[in-house]
Structures are given as structure tokens and as C-alpha cells.
Image (tube, rainbow, N blue to C red; front, side):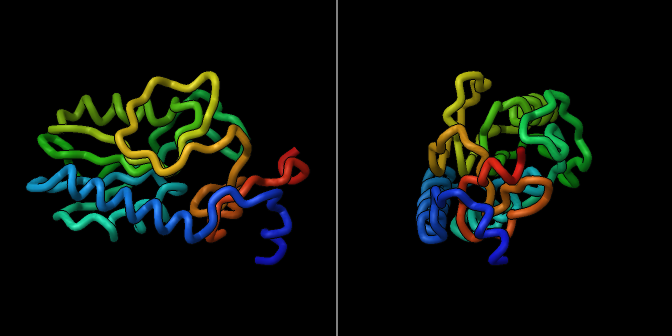
Amino acid sequence: MQVMHEDIDKILFTEDDLRARVSEMGHQITADHQGESLLVVSVLRGAAIFMADLVRNITLPLEMDYMAISSYGNGVKSSGIVRILKDLSSSVEGRHVLIAEDILDSGLTLSYLMRNLESRNPASIEVATLLRKKTRAQADIDCRYVGFECPDEFIVGYGLDYAERYRNLPYIGVLKKSVYC
């Protein structure tokens, strides 16, 4: 793991930062959804770690489900083509859906996912994103819960990857440009 740490230019959010903010988000979601049952949907693979920590801080009845969606491949920019690789196992019809997303970057994938889930007639759809990147060309998406605003840099860790590496870092950091150029 030491080799992975050497590829990081700087740490943006420490393990303690992440633990504290995800806990706050879970408590806010609990307060906002009293009396409801949630279907929490994670977009694999990046958001799985965030969702696992988030749901441990939500004290409501909930079900977890997963989708795999691709728009990046092994590149550093979205291809703009979104494909569902694994669909939900559960029906969303009439349910309160909370999408647990790792990062809102261009918003293309999340926009597609929200349209797709809306067509399945849920009672509601909300988004909890751990990170929202400050980018100029970002889809207009209402994220009810945002963990952190982050700079428009290539970041990894806590589920975020580059070519399937670095997901297991316990913090979020900026990947050195020399690694992906």
C-alpha cells in the first residue's frame, strides 16, 4: 500500500474528515425521512464504500441495492455514453429512493440514472453525494445531501479509482498527474 500513497500529490479529506461528515449526513437523512422506509441505491463500484458507511448512520428501515453503470472505462474523462451493466434487484415503484453517489463530476451518469429510475415510478428520488466537483460544465442536478465540495482535480481513494486502483485508500487525495498522463 505504501506504493499507492506515493502516487498521491496531496490529501483533500482525511479518514477522520470522511467519518465525521458521513455521520452527519446519515443523521440528517434520518431526521428528514422519519416515518419512511428507504431504498438506498449505490452505483458500483465507487460508491459502495460511501454507501456502507452512510447506511450505518441512518437509523430508519432501509433496503440496499446496487447498480453498475459505466461511462468512463479506464479513462480520466467521461465517454458520454452511459451503459447499465447491472440493474437493480428491487422494484422502485412507490418507494422512497436515495441514490448514494461517490462523486458528482460532469453529472452525465447521474442524470441518466435519475431519468431511468424516475421512469419506474418511485414515490421520491433524492441524491446523497459524497463529493461535488467544482466544474464549469456540470449537469443541473439537485443533490439534497452533499458531503464536500472538491476541486476539479483527479481524485482517488475511499472508493474512487483510477483504472480500478486506489479505491482502498482510507482518505481522498489528488492523484499525481504523472500517474495518469
